[in-house]
Length: 431
Image (cartoon, rainbow, N blue to C red):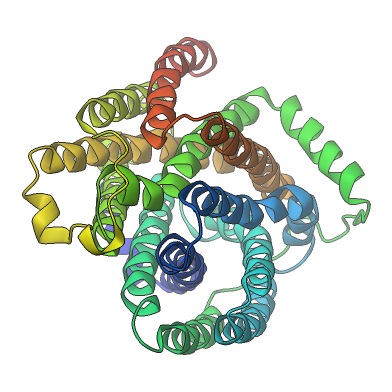
């Protein structure tokens, strides 16, 4: 169906969408509050610029690490047990994590907060195979593109709102307490909403669980490679997250040191990125008219490349502006390059939505129902490898003296051969 919003009026989709939205909101409320705390308050207290940027990238890597370590187990559990019950249990664990995070904020204990960040990554690791694995159980085939588009749009809008609220609250007097109270309230609400998610009978109830994390991770990776069409989609999604993680991790430093903007400008940059992904994801269903195919994926990669290179051309060089001289949103928008940067960033993210949504739907459509969640878990494993590699490469490039704009330039150039490769391979597999 071309109208994807009708799914938001159904019980088979709305509770899942809302639960996912609230979880993603909490992830990013916590994560971005921590990142802004590092970038601004700790920098004002004397933390060197280079160390602040490295800690920001490190935080992104810590959040992603559980996806590599625990996705195999998460996929097995999602295929073996009833999914709605597992989701409710995961949301209870989120409440505990938010309580621990409250202690970290109130004690101003950086490594306690980093531990909670790892815990939130673990929470998302176990929720991912459930949310993507359950969609084909509750949606018709011609609704899969719409459902995935809405999930993707909701995720990035939650990133946006979490970032805005985290940025607005954390630097206010008593900001740590305000953020903490909101985190706990959202986690409790997420658990209550999850109780309305319809049952989804386990597709492989007799599956034997393996607890050797390294062995199971390797097995599930090898098994995904045996299905070439699924594995190609996994590689495509992983590339998207390699680029996307690099952008998201660098935005605070980019706004602070290249755009000379305060936390309001960080919020604006993330707003444009998130809105672009959301609109591109929803537009994908209208573009594809409910059909599940990959014909527009190379176009998405090419659009990401063009937008990135345009943004790089318009971005100023590094400027070490004193904290008190950073520009607010109104003054920054008056700069001659500002609107060009925002439009370019919107192009990057809009085409990112067109790139990634069909690939998620193809994994769900092409994988066997008895192993669908494990294929989603395999996707998460490869995604996490790409994202951790992204964090490591960004840290290395920053330590070599490259700027954030240089990193964006490399990402934009790399998208050009990716668009060509995807077009060549997809034409062979999906003709």
